[in-house]
Image (cartoon, rainbow, N blue to C red):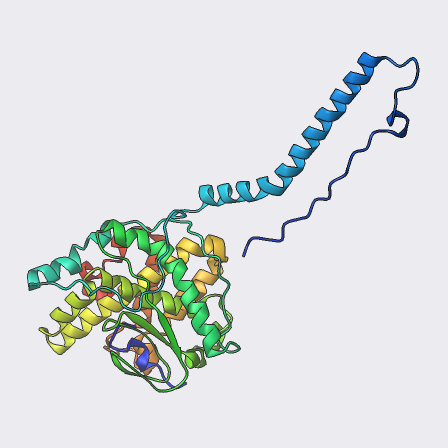
Length: 349
């Protein structure tokens, strides 16, 4: 998860459819009206018939043009009316981002953690995401990498306006999928891992990560993408000064207190992942049962579940805690609902 390689404790083990072509007809005059007028015909009546025919041709032509264009315009209009943040300009992934905000004093660090302006922002819903889930077991590393990088566009559309609304710079982190040993600015990444590295502000995702997912969750839509959403939660923490501030405090605390601060960071990312999935569920089709299964999936990432010790004291939080915070995210729109740094200690065990 964060630059501490948070997933390292795992055991080894478009919607734009095809436009319909509309054939047009030439609308010829009836045979008996071609050529010269017959003797005895009424010139005025003939003129009126010609005018009527011309108006009918114009009316029909305009209707045909409307059939070809109105669908797109009305579709765009419906999207604008139904989804939020449509005017937000999604940036390209930035491999050379500006430095992360860093506190100058411990007082400022505390402010970043407990009174951060990001907590005053709302995660709007619904927000559009036009991406289908991916099967990690079948896709190549290159396909997974392209998919996850595309998926960050949805994450930016949801959270970018909130980050900027809080007065920070929103940066779209690149995603690197690796299928072997890889050395990063945060050190070597384990074989089964997903992590946001604050040193280079990138996300690293192991191709074989799904190998260690419990089998019963492999068919849950967007389960792998929810891991990415968690890592993007760390990217939000990075861009808002939370990540560096937490690390600064952690270095001054006892081992047990430092672990608690780490857990607060991790379950906050779980909470924001839940908010993201709730925000886009209308467009990607995450139903209520899928949300429950995703929440249950987060419980399998708990320190107790991964170690087999129900009383484990780790740096990510027990399964019950992780599931609870993810669920909180699905139920709340205020980013302040995920302010784990003011939550009671027994909620971040």
